[in-house]
Image (tube, rainbow, N blue to C red; front, side, top):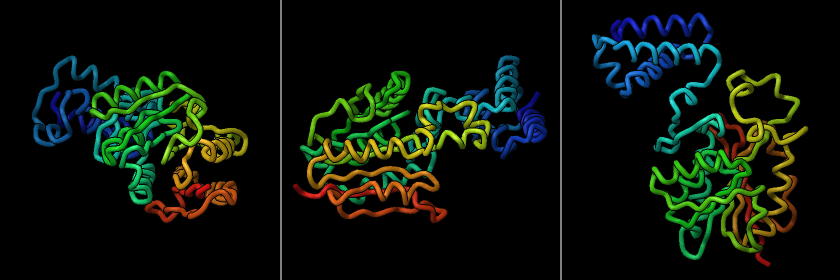
Length: 281
């Protein structure tokens, strides 16, 4: 079977299974089966698949038709121009989270200068910690309650040569008072009641501890804002990703101890990032 035929058959199978962007998905899965990039698939339609390549491709198509996300099949996802390893132990990075990086680099350039330190709370695959370490040149620490997630994040940091330090703990409980100049987080924010309405790729495959915060979806925001008042140095910034309907309730959590509260929208104009600066003592 040639690459051309394999793509046609794969696209039809995915279409029939109502998988979105079927042609693109077939290209990505075929390239993964061939251990090549998509450019090779485009440039070599006459390539004859070996038996092993066909077996891999067929398995990947079957997994995707069963709802397994493409990123968990290929084990990778791009974020801020870098390839990150992902597994079902971590959330799949979304492009919206890049707004957290952009906000951090814009609001807190001082964090790149010693002795400033950045803390990524709930790091997952390590996308924020690794990216800020490489983009800002700052000392970055990262936490997660999941040991499996820490393992994935540490592998990403090592492969991308980002000297991030990882700590397994609940949010920022392991850190001393006034020890950070910048805290970033993309916390779980999906209410438990919304579980049934999620796409099956999200509901059935992504780690629930990284998705669901509690009955309201606001529970971890409240804890992070409260503990950031302890861990941040006066004048330090807290920057968090927001859920679709969380901007108002989360903004109300910031007391008079905070100043400069602002929100940054995503490309759809939805408030996606909230940032505030801890007032000087």
